[in-house]
Amino acid sequence: MSHYPSLADDFFVNMNLNTELQLPSARETVLEFFGRMQKSYPGMRNFYQRDNGDFVLEEDKDQAHYRWMCLEPRRICSGCVNPEAVDAAMEQHLLALQLAPFMLSVSPLDCEALDFLFGFDFMYRGNHDEIVAEALGTSSALDGLMGIPGSKALNFEPSLTMSLDETCRRQCRLMVETRTNAYQVRRGEFPEEAISVYFTVRQYGSLAHDGSYEETLMELRRDCEELLNEHVVEQVLRPLAHAISTR
Image 1: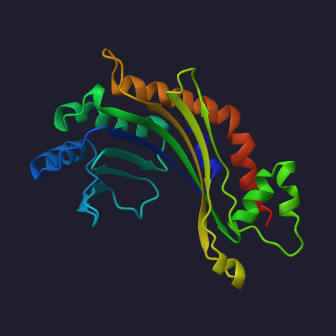
Image 2: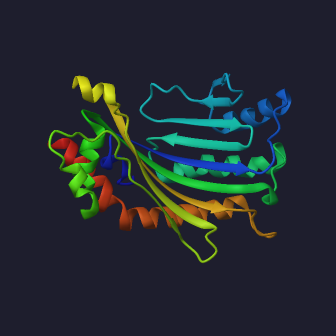
């Protein structure tokens, strides 16, 4: 069991494969692909098409742990919410990548970007932007604005992207998403909603001729966990959880 469930109210492990060419959308192809996924994960029995045309297969979302998958015109998305172990999420993501070349005609050449993502949700009833600024702090250059008498934070969503190699083809990104709006701040009435922290490692561009999606994803997972544990858990996640718990 990993330590990630203790860091937030919910956490999730996602994989996204963005393709250069459009994915097949024929009825037979989509149903065969999702049918193969369901064979390995029988609980994924909720299948539907969104108004925008995306196809979705998911488990019941009222469970503490659930899996989901989505086929968009140029993206394959696979996610696990509150998995018992990261390995359990990886098995699902790797299966999707193993099936994609044969069932969706996705070759290593067709890769626009491959993502491995850890996400953390912190439930909070209050001004999200204010609590994020309190927990993570601001640079000295912004202290003056934050200290304006009578002012309140309306949008504070730190985001940082870093290159992990000289080619800039492998990158990591930290992003905080808040859900407070000006109307709520003006009225002083806040629903309990999630503050989300996303940490992603992304590989851009076509894979090497002898490369594979599975091997690349395992590399991204290794880099993501290493960077998350060294630079995000104690620096971002725990301070945010502490700030919320003391309110």
